Length: 334
Image (cartoon, rainbow, N blue to C red; front, side):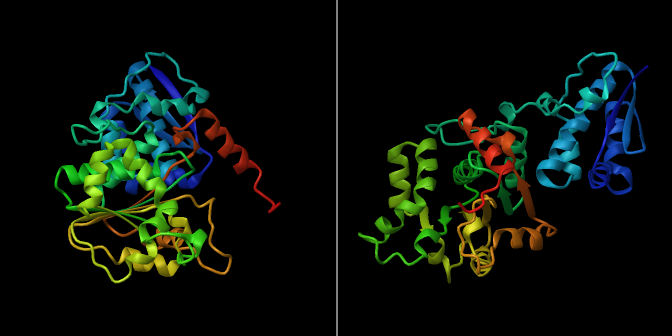
């Protein structure tokens, strides 16, 4: 008989992990084959060494999902239990071992998670457990909000999922939208036509497209209006059917703009809203729309909220450390 204890500091995390009438924990117990006891904010697993090791890995992954999404759904639990965790074979698992964040890596992100794209496109797949949660949320829901730091894959994966939906004919069109806050959405003073005026603000979306598809493919889609890139202000009055719509940098959308944007959604459409709540460029007197929308809509069926973290950053190693450094010591405005 082997035993492992896992301490918890947050009562809300415990309630989320247990599920309604302990249904989540019962599924873990029955699937993994361990006895589970909760006492004094500590979870105790008992059983044969292999089952206990597997149970520790499963609990660790579920805690990761709670940390990333703020909730735990039944289908999330079933997915984790079906991922084939490999037991470590250790006869004893200490509390310190049970708390290691690397336990999420046991599940892995493999071939089955690859985003299906065009034959000529670069192959794309989530690279972290948080990104995997994000991609699956897009697959399951028609409206997904995703927040996270720079480099965590918010925009890139949304664009990849939009192209995948286009490939499988789930949608007929992709619309990529961004607020042009730095110009106050008054672009008249910039040189050139409308496309030239808004290009600096929409360039990150084009960069994501160019990275996944060939230049010729991107140009053909833009010329045929299969892919449209537009500033947020240009969305007013439209209804978009059978369209995959991405609102990027949504932390710079006001509450009024957010309502306007979300109500553009037509039949057969899907919306992904991405943003970084630590990089708001809105004037102080304007109410931000991203956080407000997430709070108001998160409980609606078909809506999901995903929060990526620093561990989901997949750019240069220094990006993770830069984000962490600024998070520890907020700017004083100097």
